Structures are given as structure tokens and as C-alpha cells.
Image (cartoon, rainbow, N blue to C red; front, side):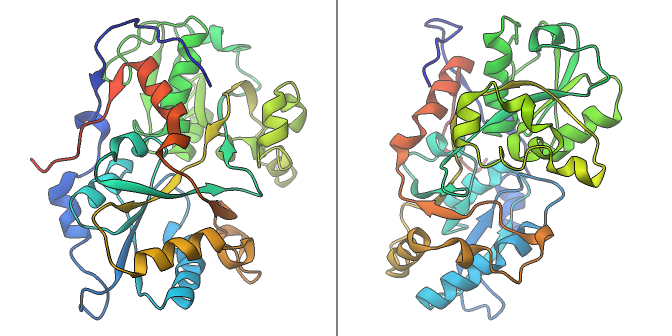
Length: 336
């Protein structure tokens, strides 16, 4: 994924303070305990709140139980309040492991390691979408000039940052977004992919939304994706595109699909040197789909990935390319 920076040699802006979350002070209150027995031996695993409507603790429980059985470790699952908290927790020694956004990988350099990249039905790649409603007057991304678009959390790679470059690459002036306002359109940030989609559906002033394909494809007729060859070949969402329409969910209209993006990582605190870390990493990379999504798990509580493959910081170079195009950089997360 090669992109030409729109700002030339301009100075990259620091992107941290505005990315939301309660900050380390609030996070410490969430992560103060290490397990029900209070002995401090539990492996604290903080989870990324990517979608508002999911019960992420419930989804990750089979994975937790699998890791505990394979390694003998006690694992405590903790839902973070924001994307940024997943990285703050590792930096502040308030978690050993974290389910994070791809955007967190560059930000974690120096204090967090990539344990593996999540895969879905064999694929390590996923996609962003820009969508509208079939009854809107929007027929292309260019038509969003002067309109409003809802996007995900500021730190979301597929919900906000990659879509921002998609807008820019069509010629729309996104100004200083995400550090400031766009020039040619209004970009509204929501807390997650689902909320961005629902804002568009329920608010006539919001003409479009940007979400990961996992939050939009079930409501988009499959044939709308057929011109995007890489999506058809690599996306775990292609086969299920349009499936929610059978349940009378509202149809959505596809405007654009991103280039392939690396799926989110599972990261670990670099200074975590307990012997159980190696055992957990080995178990993660050996996990089969049935280990992560047992047959008796209800559809509403299924984990949204089916495996974890070996990965490193280098696999997330596309994230750096998007940050470069947007003129962003991450600093270490420090308590103020």
C-alpha cells in the first residue's frame, strides 16, 4: 500500500492528546485489581472497545479459558474505555497484554511488542468502507463535498484514519483532520464503527459513514463489492455481504473500499518477562477456530477473528504510511 504524502515535507503532527479516553488516572482505577483472589498473579488482558454493541468480555471468554487451560495462567479480561487506553495500560504497567487497534503499533514502539496478528477465516487483511444510504443523493465520495460524514474513534485505523486518506485521495481537502477540522466537508467522530453507521442511518444531516467492512458489509448487497478485486479475494466479509438484508436490516450503499489493511494485533508489554508469556504466545499462535469460537457459543457472542498468526512491527508498515499521509505521529503515553 504505497501512498504519496499530501503534505510533502511538512512536519508531522503529534496525535495523542485529542484521541480521547479517561487518561491514566482514570485507567488506574479500572485496572487496579489483578483478579478476584487479589494475589496479583493474574495476567491482565485489556480489550479494545471497537464496537459499541458487542459484549467483548463475553466474546473473549472462550479464548481466555483456552489460554488458561493451555498454560495454567489466570487471565483477567478488562474492557478499556477507549482505544487509547489499551496502549496506555501497557506503558503504565497496568496490563500485560492488550487487544489493540493497528494504529497502536507505531505508538507502542519501545514499550510494547506484537505477539501476533489476528486472522479471520484464514485472512490477515481487512478493509475500510465509506457508505451511504440508497435514498441519498450521494453517488461517489467526491459528492461528499459540503456534506457531513460520521467516522469512528479518532484512533481507529479502519474507522477513521484510513478513510480519511480515502477522502483525501479523491481530492477532498480534509484540512487538519484528525487534529482539526476538514475544509471540504464535516467529519464527525463517533465512539466506534456501529455508532458511526447508526448516526448516518438515523440523522438526515449525516450523508455518509466510514466503518470497517465488518460493520457494514452484512447490509450491503454483495454485487456492490464485485468491482473491488482485492476485497473479493482477501476479505472475510465478502461471503457474508448482504446477509443481514435477509433479516430485514436496512440496506446500505457502498461508495468506496480501501486498500487491504493489516488486521489488528495482540500486543504485550515489552518488560513483561514472566515465563508464562512464552507459553501464552505459543498457545495464541497455535489456536484453532474451535478454540476461539466453540460450537456452543451463541452467534451474538462469537469472537470476530478465527486465528492468530505470527507478526512483527514490520507487518504494520501500512499504518505508518497512513500516519505519514495524515501528518501524524505518536508519542509515548505518559501520565500527566
